[in-house]
Image (tube, rainbow, N blue to C red; front, side, top):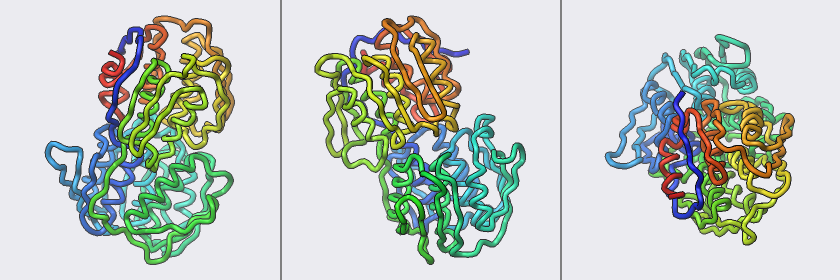
Amino acid sequence: MEFLDLSVRDRAQGTVCLPGSKSISNRILLLAALASGDTLVRGVLAADDTERMLDALTTLGVALSPQSGTRDILIHGVSGRFPVRRADLFLGNAGTAFRPLTAALALTGGDYHLHGVPRMHERPIGDLIDALTALGARIDYLGQPGFPPLDIHPVDIAAGGTTRVNGNVSSQFLSALLMALPLVGGGTVEVIGELISRPYVDLTLNLIARFGVTVVRDGYARFTVPAGSRYVSPGEIHVEGDASSASYFLAAGAIGGGPVRVEGVGRDSIQGDVHFAAALAQMGAQIEMGPDWIEARAPAGGRLRAVTLDCNAIPDAAMTLAVAALFADGTTRLEQIASWRVKETDRIAAMVTELTRLGATVESGDDFIAVTPPAQLTPQAAIDTYDDHRMAMCFSLASFAVPVRINDPRCVAKTFPDYFDVFAGLCA
């Protein structure tokens, strides 16, 4: 197995220009493809997940024009109907591509086969399929019911339908439905139970609005896409820096002295994970923020303090807090993280295993993890990453205390291919 050995880091200091947000990139790419008119998308993330979306759109007949020497792409919209009506789409482990494409293809007609890597076939999608079926879609499971791979069949969907979706598994299901409903002339989605990861739904609503569709909602319980809604290109749209990726560098500044500044997200960000900075501040870090930048320094006393936090609003960035807890006094408890179970790996189980490998005392349940650091971290620990980019990036922070080995470091290509080079430059 390939691995990367990280020596002990004494300090982190400098500025990082963040790559584009995965969540924003893949949403905008799909919306631009479905809109009428051409859209210049600036700052698209260059990583595996966005490549899966771009490959799928190309296969579906969408014309894409990358702009030479930039991360900008001109997308020629198809006005709500993909030209290719029969296709085989391999989507890797990209949930931000698989879920919304499933909804869009199910409601627009055509024969499509959607599949991915083995882990993607273990990630539940049954709640989304049930909601689409209630609208009239016809979708077959090709393996275990409730999970990919899928076959989608053509069917006429009536406008203005109402469906329901569970809110406690993944907010991507609701986002996918909301993105797809304008393709059939509107409709309503009712959320069953409490909706997790609400900021990601807010992000979806914000981006849908930029393409001309305003969703009417009753809190987070009922969402209505008005009749006659259709996507229209805004002409040009920018992708923010990735707030989840910002968390590793901000934590490095809080643990390794700082100051560390990230550029590309800040006070004006539409991403929920920007609130990671506030969580670090609760742990004692010194945080400053501008419209599109955030800066972190170590606490005045030099060491973080343990906290108990509701992490429903920052599910991805909360993983970074679990490793930062190794550098805090006391037991840090992170709650409302049930969605970790259905991500690229079972992140609660993975975190328990790898934090324990470093010597921490770890307690966990269905929706929480509690981390108590040891007096001294275990040196030379070999951290397994489970083909999960965020596991690899999070555990790089352990090198502020001891040498650490990261197994399969190239898994970061999912969202941040040059992460370890950027991290090394920050800690040089």
